[in-house]
Length: 607
Image 1 (cartoon, helix red, strand yellow):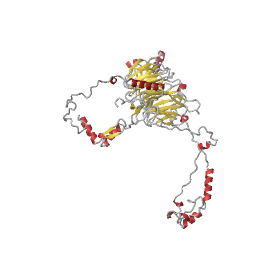
Image 2 (tube, rainbow, N blue to C red; image 1 turned 60 degrees about the vertical axis):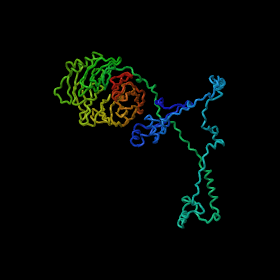
Image 3 (cartoon, rainbow, N blue to C red; image 1 turned 90 degrees about the horizontal axis):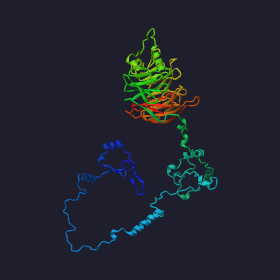
């Protein structure tokens, strides 16, 4: 049994077929409960061959104890008995036999050899079949399979049995029990009823003996009715609708027809020593910035995975975001209660100097307004490292995101008790505003609409869409999940995806409904991040199961056609660390590539 410990079988029968282990569905918990509840648990053993539990009798338990103590199995066996010397106690003068041994007793038999070789030859030629399996199932075949259903014989196939008649009961007896006989009133009531309404079609009567029973008056009538029943019975066969289950599954296009999409891991950006919470790609697609819990921000060259720059900041970096405006070279970094605006100084030198000039050309307004956030210009060592502006907030900042034009910046400070959870900064005027007067729940993440003046705010269960010009709530989307973790807005602006910690991804069509158009449950664990591609019909989601799932999400210009959503690829590569997998995903601005950052301290590029 030891040899077959890891296999589903416990050996082979004579035909070489596996003998499978008996199915045993007791888990650890059942074992424990059994141990607690069953007084005979200690003397119950499992038979490995049959899987049955066997309760040992007292004699068997005694035997086990004796064997454990090294004694003989049989109680009555006395190991100290005097030995009787059977063979050498009487000395004989003659041997029993003195014949010399035959030669045949130590030479292999030729006759046997010949027999065996004949059998082997017969088996080789196929004259002898070694052990044929017995045909236990009788062979049936359909006699009428080839018949024409309209021919005479075809009727047997379409045979429907005749409707059965009701069997006679006590009331039809010639000597029925007295309770079946009708009283005078019952009989009058019976006669006044219509024949269809009567429970019995005759009156029960009592006779002294069978000889006295007269002929039944309605005999011929009833036989005739029965014949009518038989030949007018509608012998129609109801055909079952055979639905092929394959036809019920919606026909989705093959992933091969939906290329291009990322399929293989091309580069790994190594260098961070702790979880990489956030990544962002420059609008040119040449540089990548990543922020990690090891209190550093690293700038990478996308095509070579070379780390060009590492900046130490004063806390674990919760979010990084590259300004989407290609004419400005700024990166927003959030840690603790601070947002840093960095000029990384990568790429076009003219662009970097223009950005610096833009920041230094700011003039203080006449009357300084009281703001919830303090703006400060970096000097000295910080300025040399690329720090340009430092924004000190009253609470810890969790997320930071730019508006598409690159002047406005929104950040989230989750706090259930106050109304200062979301603030919007304007970089060119160094102004900060708190758009909401009262709190509507714990804010998870925010996003600007790519083209219209709308602002998306995701709380735990809802996504609220605000119109920034009219300053009013336009829509409230119900995510149907317990806790939203992330959100992304389609570049055309009419669709939103939300990831949640209960493994769901909800796609909203804003023109269609406030409920999700589709809910995808492809991940096994919590979703941490979702992202749309700017140009290709792709979206991706990263989860704690260490995988990134890329889906094809085609939005049509024809408003009558619903979006087409097809999962096309599961990208694996990140190792799960402290139960966290992929923490952020983002697409390359121009190529169908996806970047993902994980708790294993790496950023990976799938192309």
